[in-house]
Length: 296
Image (spheres, rainbow, N blue to C red):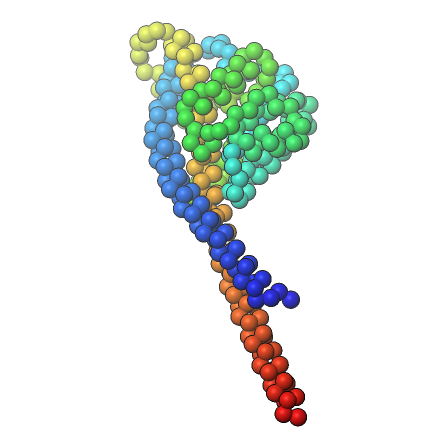
């Protein structure tokens, strides 16, 4: 049975731990607000990019560009796993990695080979532990990614696709829904999906025809310049969504940890009070027994 001193040490230790978890919760909450603001600032740019892509694509008609090439015989599929550099975020990293391995099994069942790309130290360490074929990995910016980080990743992925090293590129990341909910998302990045070029319009809108614009330079050349920027923008959006999801998951995890620590402190305090009462009762009994022995 634990002594009063042992229980007191445990209460002190858990109290210090709760201070740390509460501080981490507050930090994650502040970073989450900043991440949400970055996503909201980026969305109008991304939406305008999609509109411009759709308009130029319709004006250009059928064009042959490397990033639009759809290969019939897909041999290698690049799986890009976007995780965090740190843990203590509940199931944030585990659910993305678990979905990525499920995607790998689907790819292998189709007779194709999975080629891994990763961002975040958690994905890199897991893939390295499982001895996977990791083509390239990036780390150090999961909490605050920049557009330059997205450009570096997009350049590597586009180069691998154009050079024929991979025939399809899929990204797996946590999309931000709320501080309590992060949705694992799987999206095809390359070749660029056809619905992106069509702009998601319905048949009635497309049947009216493309507005009569004069393009300078030609639409084909504009589209060739826009496609790499689209890839960069989509990766940047995924990195921002993942960053916000990470902070939301960490804030929730630290809040739950603080709550559990408080419940454990209450339980240990009750046990400590009972142990102290038992010690006092035992001392009283010993004094009475000693007094009876002396008087007898």
